[in-house]
Length: 271
Figure 1: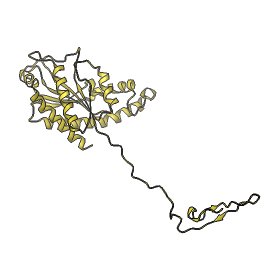
Figure 2 (figure 1 turned 45 degrees about the vertical axis):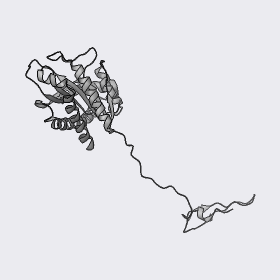
Figure 3 (figure 1 turned 90 degrees about the vertical axis):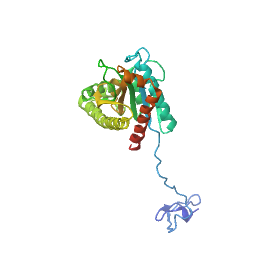
Figure 4 (figure 1 turned 30 degrees about the horizontal axis):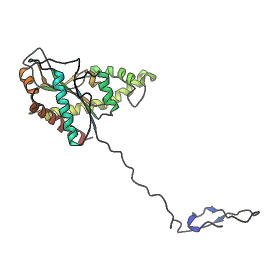
């Protein structure tokens, strides 16, 4: 039995089945219309997996760690918990983001766990919320911190302990290779963190008082994740009577959280 011509390709030998005892001989079938009636796969465009940006909000302190104590006794952990929950609710109501909050109540969360929550959640942005304090009662205003250069050496130890950076265990790599891997991640993350910090300060302008030199750098542990853009927002100084009074008011905190949400929208629009 010969294969149907429509099932053959030009120039391809097609076997012929003969009665028992005969040797099948190849027959060359040429069909100029070989695609007629033949089902063949249609290539569909590759679908890119789309997910919402993941925003991790970290209320500073909590539980046994009250943080700063205000001029009138206000606890930093109380203000940060309220502001973080308000920001999370605002972001969730927009439907644009998956929001993770490191704590929703007055509990203590280890610094390691805060970073691990961000990494496990595949965070696109990490925002730690705090309220400042200083011996100078006149100091007031918000500020935004990103990681200082002097603190970057600590990141490699964290990477080793938590197996970060492309899931490469740096303990098995030579020091030069490990340093390069961490450095590549650091550079990208540093640039993104600085970009967000500058955008946030511009958005906060006029909505709350900013302290001079409002973009600051420090080695805060929560800023150490080398592959998660992160900022630490100081809402104001609890040691200042006016800032403390304002930060206790939801209406004032709403101005700040709306500015943060607007900055996140603008920042993510460029990703």
